[in-house]
Image (cartoon, rainbow, N blue to C red; front, side):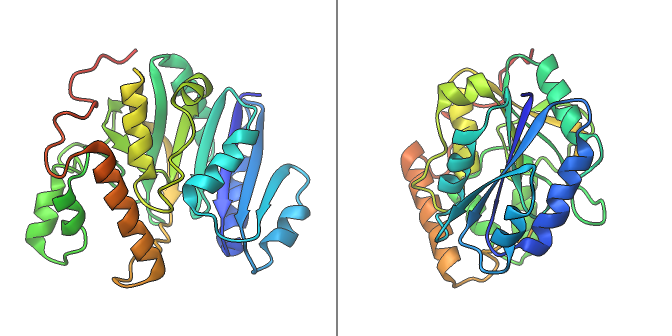
Length: 267
């Protein structure tokens, strides 16, 4: 088995169906499996999953959160590469085959990611330098000065058209080398929703693996963000995840002590 694709979903059948169809259409050179973890959906998702013979479904009675659900799927995965994918994505033809080929050609890379675009093909800045507590606040402010402060962290001055080692990539689509995942371990389940993707990239770097951006592979990300409201239960859980993240790594503004892409050789 070359590739295991793990998707989690919660009441997003209208997004999940085209996502799964795009995965099927994207792979023709590698043996693969699709694992979908349903976090307590009530919109007909469980019934649809049961009707799909090529999907390995996992059903949770409640929403267990991102990291716990992904860990359920990853624990079942049999591929030499493990790919986590958000349900609000559309994989471009050949993209997953390309990701496998890229990982094969870079044995020192433990975690990779494709170029993400929005529904209209506009680039999303999803490979980044590590955030600070201040930059997380700036993301919530609708002011031009806040956007300018974020530009360097988002690598906006870089054209995003070549392979590059980066501090981290967002979790909408990440591919892990199985040996790296087994070494690093599961996602941090104490983070219900939030920076579990950053946390995992840090742990990859600490374990001696690189994190790499592969623009040859393209995935459209519809980005159904569930923390847009300033005050909501999910926003509160996201905020708590950030508190845990910054407490775990003992920093607020200075990222210099974190392992990352500043001084690395890629092979």
